[in-house]
Structure formats: C-alpha cells, structure tokens
Image (cartoon, rainbow, N blue to C red; front, side, top):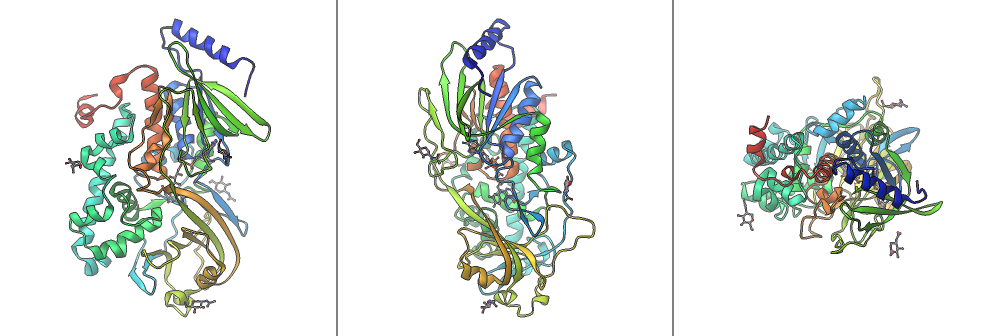
Length: 494
Ligand SMILES: Cc1cc2nc3c(=O)[nH]c(=O)nc-3n(C[C@H](O)[C@H](O)[C@H](O)COP(=O)(O)OP(=O)(O)OC[C@H]3O[C@@H](n4cnc5c(N)ncnc54)[C@H](O)[C@@H]3O)c2cc1C
Ligand SMILES: *[C@@H]1O[C@H](CO)[C@@H](O)[C@H](O)[C@H]1NC(C)=O
Ligand SMILES: *[C@@H]1O[C@H](CO)[C@@H](O)[C@H](O)[C@H]1NC(C)=O
Ligand SMILES: *[C@@H]1O[C@H](CO)[C@@H](O)[C@H](O)[C@H]1NC(C)=O
Ligand SMILES: *[C@@H]1O[C@H](CO)[C@@H](O)[C@H](O)[C@H]1NC(C)=O
C-alpha cells in the first residue's frame, strides 16, 4: 500500500507521461466504496484504460454495500436490494460476463394492504395486472403505464450514448440529453402532480402508486416524478435476482478486474498541485492505523452527505473548495423474521387460506412498508415456497426498527429476528440542486445519480458514465462530454 516516496514515483510517472506526449495511461486509480457502483466502475475503468492500470478499491465495511445477505436458519437471504428490472442492461451483462445465473422465480401473489383490508389483490405475479385493475380504476392504469413507458423508453437511450462513448459531467446534463427539460423538471415535480396532470386519479395514486413508492423508496407520492417513474417501472416488469446472492456481482467484478481491495475507511482526499495533471492523495484509516497513497484518478462511489457518519470525508487543497454535499438519506430497516405469520391481522383467521406472499401497504397508518415471504438466495430445483401456516422467513421493511409489540402483531410467534439498518435512498426533497459527477479534474462522484434515481442499475449506469468521463477527460476528448442532440449524433455515427 503506502510505499516510500509515492509522491516522487507518481511525479516520475507524470514526467514520463508528459514526455510521451500526454498519452500515457494513468498509473493508479482509487475507488472509494465496493458496492455495485465501485465494483462496476473498477470494471469499466479497466475496460477503457486497459489491464495495466492499477485500481485500488477502498472498502470500510463489506464488499457489496447495499447488496448484502443475512443468514437465517442455515440459509442466506437478501437483506439489501432484492431484485432488478428485466431491462437492467448493465446488470444483465455483468451476470453473463461473470458466469452467474438468474435465480429461479418462485411465483407468489401480491396485494396492497390498506391498514384494515386489502385495497388490491393480485391473481398473479405482476402487481399492476391489467384486467384486475381495469374494473376498479378504469383508464388510470393505462395512463400510468403509458407515462412510465415513455420515461423508460427515453431513459434507455443512455445505453446507446454510452456504447458510443459519450459521458456527462453532471446529473442535469445526463437527464437533459435523455429527455430534455421535461426530464430535468421531473426531478423537481412530484409524482402525484405529474400523474394527476396526465389524468391518473387521486384514488389510484393513494391506493396503488403510493404503495409501490413506499415499497421501493419508503417515500410518498410527493417524491420527485423521475425517481418515482423508475420505481413504478419495476412494479410492471418482470423482476430478477442473482442465484447465490446479488452481492456476487460485486465480488465477481472486483476479482475479474484484479482490483486491489483495501479494507480501510477513506478520510480525506487532498489535491497536490503539480504542473499539468492533478495528483490526489487519498488518506485512510484502519485497525493498523492510518496511511495514504497517491492517485491520478479518484472515484467516490458512496453517498456523500452531511448527516451521515458513513462517509466522513474532507477535501483539502481544492480551490475553489469542494462544497459540502447537501441532503440526507431515508433510513430503512429490514427485519428478517423466522416465524409464523399472524394472518388474523390481515383478516384471515385461518392461516391456510392466506393467499399472499408479498404485501405492500398504503401510506397510513401502517408501521411497515412491505412484508414478504422470501426465498433463500440459493434455490434448488425442488424448492417450494413455505405455506403461510408453516414457519417461514418473512422480510419486513419499515422506516424504524420494529417494536416487540409490532412484531407480536404481525407474527403469531417467531424463532428469530435479524435486522439490517440502512441509509437506503436519498430523502428526496432534502436537497434542491442536482449534484455533479465531476468534482475536480479527475475526481468524480458516482453516487450523484442517486439524486435522480436510486437503484442498482442506476449505479451501474453512473459507473459507466464516470469511467467514460475519466477516460474522455484523460485523453482530452472533449467532444464526447456533455454533448446535446445526441439522438441525432448517434444516428449518423457509424
Ligand atoms: C433495503 C434496501 C432495498 C433496496 N431494494 C432495491 C431493489 O430492489 N432494487 C434496486 O435496484 N435497488 C434497491 N435498493 C437500492 C440499491 O441497493 C442501491 O441503490 C445500490 O446498491 C447502491 O450501490 P452503491 O455502490 O452506489 O452504494 P453502496 O452499496 O452503499 O456502496 C458504498 C460502499 O462504500 C463503502 N464506504 C462508505 N464510505 C466509505 C469510506 N469513507 N471509505 C471506504 N469505504 C466506504 C460502504 O461501506 C459501502 O460498501 C435497495 C436499498 C436498500 C437499502
Ligand atoms: C421545465 O421547467 C421550466 C422552468 O420551470 C419551464 O420553463 C419549461 O417549460 C419546463 N419544460 C417542460 C418540458 O415542461
Ligand atoms: C449458491 O449459488 C452460488 C452461485 O451459483 C454457488 O456458487 C454456491 O455454491 C451455492 N451455494 C449453495 C450452498 O448451494
Ligand atoms: C467525522 O469527522 C468529524 C470531524 O473530523 C469527527 O469529529 C467525527 O468523529 C467523524 N466521525 C466518524 C464516524 O468518523
Ligand atoms: C394477531 O392479530 C389480531 C388481529 O389484529 C390480534 O388481535 C392479535 O392480538 C394478534 N396476535 C396474535 C398472537 O394472534
């Protein structure tokens, strides 16, 4: 890690690069965080800069970040992000590249619980099933679907732009290139406002839309329309997850990249002014004490926000200073309960007759957002979902830890409860401006995109964007950054 005279050796590399006409690849790159964002950016950086560049990935916790598992009764279960939309193209690529498999889907019915009764019951896997919804909400459902499809169709343009090597230095530029000012505005307007405008009824928003948003983000229909549309797309498509656990994608990408994973907490990034290119000193701490190392490129792949103790960085030597990143995050508690559901709570005195595996909830007055009868991360061919009258593993998602009395309400009895407390998603509305990916010449902030949409695939998209941004800036290919009218450009480019 820290060698003698890293500054000198870095300077020597820099001089060599300058002598070579500035075209030498970077020597060393630091990535802070080994979640999906950090793992994917390490992979994409290597893809662009070649196998010779050394990539150090700093991780203070465990590889995977918000992709994590907990062991219950000798099996592992997802305790963070559970599933992805089928159109998550980068994630689909990673799974193929790493020789991983999709987990077998075990069918279960969904329903939305309104506190006293179910407001919507499902006959099959898809929550937003056309026929079931038609009689109750009429045209609202179709209007919602058209709205979501239009957003998704435009969002999918990003893959084409990225395949052509285009990158964006801010979230606003990225959104503008996909859907012009309407997309940028969707980060300011609420889901409810946007849906009412296209003719979706308030009742449909209260019953269905808000339940999906609670399940995805723990937030209400007052959250911004762009992030909301992404979550609603997830409720309509088929979902998938990774056999063996979603976090295998992170460890797999890091192994494939041969990244040097350093278990330490990064505490500072300091700019050393040099002639020509910037050089960054990354300071870190672990049980062995503190240390630092020098890098040509630094990617921060974890949320930077004030009220969190999780990313306690300082930026030193930057002029103008790097502004504190505003905003806070939405806490979410995942409780994995091994026990017997109290189906009476849901109006089913006989547990054998309880038909649902996934329960969403409307805004009020529920103390939990979702309750799912979940399957382990390894699903054998003979596996079947536990029946509601059997002891099963239930995953409860709630904004706060559950009180014992609340557990006793939801479950007749239980063997164990294990919890994971997350800073899950940005608390939308807690910041007013969209952050930038570029903090300095070769210092990048991957999680900026979370402020438009926070999902595993969004972070993979951000990782590709940051890798392209670093590459295009390194080789001063400025025509590939922040271009407008890309739809036209990629059509005429071969
Ligand atoms: C309960 C829950 C359910 C979710 N469900 C879904 C879902 O179904 N589908 C979906 O797409 N998304 C879901 N998400 C969101 C998704 O998990 C995140 O958007 C995504 O995993 C974020 O990845 P990341 O790599 O950007 O950040 P993280 O996974 O948070 O990774 C950041 C890493 O950086 C490390 N780190 C932080 N500070 C430092 C430091 N100073 N030094 C060194 N290391 C540091 C952290 O330990 C962490 O490992 C869910 C999230 C939660 C919490
Ligand atoms: C976006 O908002 C701006 C300012 O509020 C407005 O001028 C513009 O017309 C809006 N664009 C769209 C497409 O709604
Ligand atoms: C679970 O699945 C992963 C990925 O396919 C595999 O590597 C692992 O051995 C499996 N574990 C068990 C206990 O079957
Ligand atoms: C974060 O940094 C501040 C100021 O340097 C310090 O007082 C605090 O203890 C740090 N917190 C953590 C969790 O490291
Ligand atoms: C189950 O739910 C019912 C109805 O809400 C409640 O009366 C009862 O106390 C709960 N707990 C148990 C253990 O049955």
